[in-house]
Length: 292
Image 1 (cartoon, helix red, strand yellow):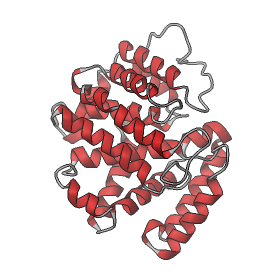
Image 2: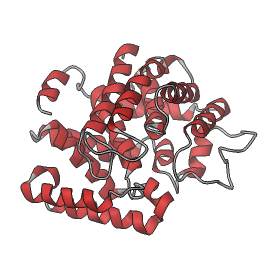
Image 3: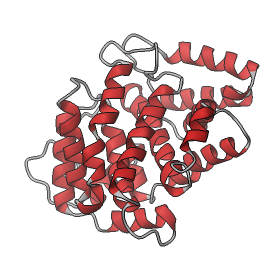
Image 4: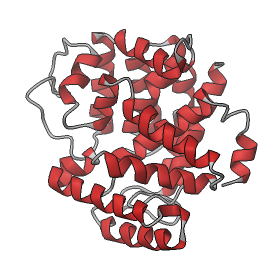
């Protein structure tokens, strides 16, 4: 895929994710004390140049450049998880697609280096994500980095779903998120509803690791259980489901956004990117947007 199209897909994925009224996340008319809808919209535009160049740059450099460009415009971490997911996906989109995008991602991940880890760690420190804490293995604050980015992600996979994607060839993105999004669109649902339902599907099956880092795994699992109940009620696809969805949103939305399923939002963004790149989403985007 041409670099400009890759950048467009990445920017659109971020814009569409934040524009869908997903529970517990920032969206139109719903802000956090330190992050607003306009911050996420601005961040989506900011990453364009870095993602456009992703096919010809090492993954770590793409991550760092995207975070640096974001920080020039916004003062809070809006998109680190998204960038960590989109960087290898964008590089894969610009390369050979043997076995599809997921097969190309697998090749990209296998080639990650210590150089990639050093740049990615610098980006993480710059973004300063909430609930990061310290690690006894491959700590991003360590003065020396001597492992590949894949090795670092493998060490972090139990506490971070974004890291787990690197180890599983983006299993959540493709096997849960992208598969669900394609199915919902094929069933004729509105695009925005399909994005919300995709986020609920991911959250119901994968406890959000941002919540887990802030409030513990038990709480994260409880939130996933609530998401499953919303899906059982119909989710974004029925009146009863939408009522349950609104109640769920109120239950997990607090002043300190301790129950914000932010990692789920990142994974949803990756699924939208896959739809635009792996499928024919960009070619039929006008039709999809008409269904928003």
